[in-house]
Length: 233
Image (cartoon, rainbow, N blue to C red; front, side):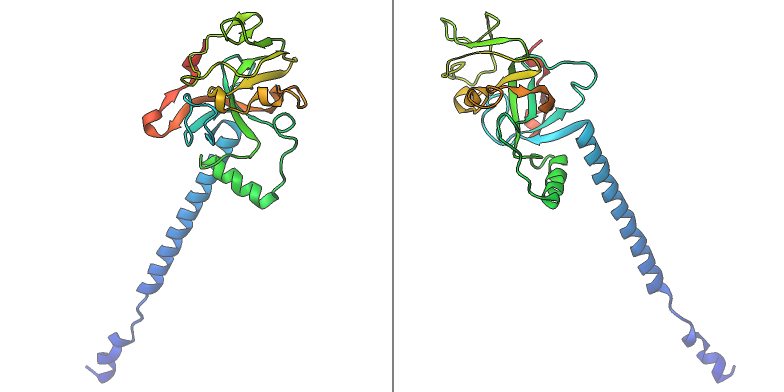
């Protein structure tokens, strides 16, 4: 054996680091694609089917607690079903509860949309959650001799009211225009709802076109998993 033959193994390259780098690079690309696909699917689902929504205040206690993550059914009224009395809805209050929506710019809007899509925040500061008390054509009045709200002369049975609350401390008598809704929070003494905006455009009513969807489920925390569809017939 010559000296040249003895030294031959020392001249062989060591390709292992390059292969490791390629495997790591492919793994990173794979998880980036998975993450982006997940965000895309979640965003599309949130935009068109079901949107998580964080309850920001106590106006719907004790039905909904502050911090509850609810699932808003955005298809509820898309296929002929109408908004009904007793529905808990999320709506955009622009033009009724708010004069106009604030423009935070495209970047802030994008971030807010992504955060809302995963249920960590609301999509807009003008979004509200309330219960429908009257629909277009209804005459809603407070109150009868027993202190109950009446709709078209019939007293409402309201088992969802916050314990100790009266149906309303504000007296009103309104004919709800067609295509609009009279909405109130279940925690009547802590809710800025249609009563608060009697002197605003629409007389405190909300356009049905502004309804984002119907709250059908409480999804989080786990101990509060439940459906809201049993609250009325």
